[in-house]
Image (tube, rainbow, N blue to C red):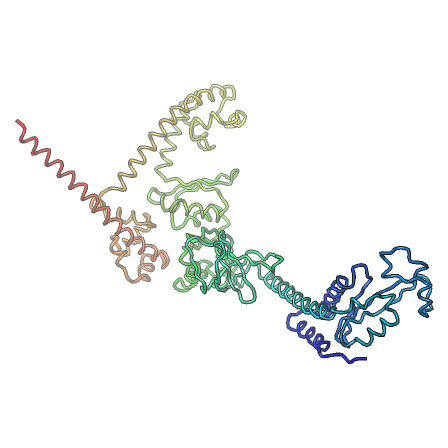
Length: 566
């Protein structure tokens, strides 16, 4: 018998090496190899043959066997390849009975040529393998190679999937490699991930080779390997970055209760402390703003507001609207809504650019928020008195009651359910039909008055916005600086900052924050806003001076023409 050749020994070595390097159990590799060899043998020797493959660890090869059943007489020609009749078996000198199973090894390797020849000489008419043996040794070697390679790739994919499945909801860092239909393919080292267009921040751009830090949004099992989906737009990226930068959050002393984010623009987080000696906001801000600035830098300049969480929803909402100041809060528990009343000069700050501030505050707190200025509330109350007071049977006291129940105009009464109106104290159920009928008539007049009020308000706003800067007092100029309210003006004036220029020209941000008591973060915002205001003010002054010169010139020409007239 021929001794095992090197290739046979090498197969053992290959299995051991792959099992060790790729973390695949040797038994799994062998089972896969046996299945693949059996499939390849059936394709080569015939699909109808009853074949089995068994790995021999001593020889380091996969051996093939064919099972042949002894029958009284062969009836089915299809199964003839797997059967032998009793008479034929006895001719071969076999002592067998019906239903006995004979197992023959199929010798296909070059090293087993002698055994193959002896088998063909003795059982060739039964097995009919002679013409099939040629070429299968090469097929077997190729199959073994392909199976090990494929199993290795599958195992690597499975290992990557298991590794990153456990890292879902974490932050990973990689290198941008290429772009596919707007998606960024990120190299994470052992695997590639994708940053889809929908999970990218609009104003962020990347080039191949750039570092990418992102949140693992999902890990999907795909046929070509696991797909790791990243996100730069998720609000969870914000919270995870704070966990990395703030040890108190990682330790559970400070807790992020809620977070809201508009990627690339602004974000808000609400934090609380489990330790009364630890200030949650201060812990997140860090020494001279170092911790929050690290997060801002990673998010490429996205502004972040850190607010203290409060169990009292009204206080929480007021904190969430920072830096705007709130005068009064009216809570509607039934609709989970709040009406917030702010000073007139704080309205635009409370709403924010394109409604961003109030939108984020609503997301952060989970309440529906409606913001009105104090003057607007007075207007609404006066309008409600006129509109509701015109209805039959509605006196001044009932107007107050209706207003307290959320009725702001006659339309509200006309659209209300009669049964609900009947439950309001002071309303006679018998007069509800006539009251609602009159309310429907009043609606047209109310709409006209509302349109007139809106027009007047807009005209007044435009006129105020275009008041000449030289006509404004210093407090009025300071009030036009974004983020500066009445309270802040008082603090600044007491600290010696009496003009917008005083704020813009202050080089010591620590002093600007500490002396008025507004804090370093607010001081940085005030200085930037003051500088922007001075630029816009200079443009407005130039424009208005040009308009005045033009009007004066036109007025002078008219006077000369009038003097020339007879």
